[in-house]
Length: 273
Image (tube, rainbow, N blue to C red; front, side):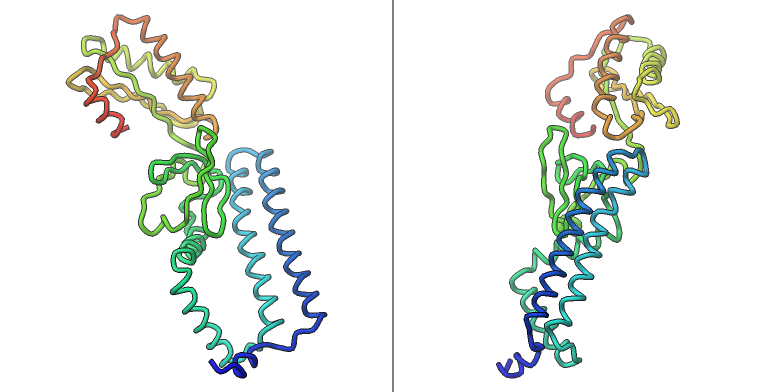
């Protein structure tokens, strides 16, 4: 592009314009910071769907603030004629295409995620074997915290080529599965009844959701699964621990014995679970 034509793209920049631009940038930063601090604080004082709805506002507000700031700033510095707009878009497209392909692809995927909502703050998701709660959705990455309190940053780019497992999908219900493995010689109906009673007596159980006890016969014995829902997704690990401990105690009072699973079959079970 001719240097003179390039300079014609820009308006005359005065000190007043620079001050106004600085104020716009500072106001946008302040609004984004306030939304990231205030909304999670408010959400932690709410429950169920209201908490998830408030958390979902954080990335939406950030996108809106950034978009408004850009729309405000661009006309201050650039003369937006049709010719100038085409020239700017051409140059920007080339730069993006060659230098920032992956980065921009993640940003675009983030915009798609804000629209399609495959995950929201408060959701429990698994991406490439990493499971945790979505704490923050940025422009480029989603931040999840694992049960071991490890923070993992997953690029939105995974939307294009990876599987995303969402355990509660924006809702307040998350199904938990607790496994028990027994030797084959026992009364299966009695075991199912005992495990159902264990689930129904849990202090963490969400009573509005069903409790299922499933049995599957294996070469080494019988595989039992309790499927039930905790009152809050954040209680899932306490809930599963409670069912495991009380389930084992209850089964020990029956004439049953726990199965000894060969290592190779144990690996297959862990994959299927």
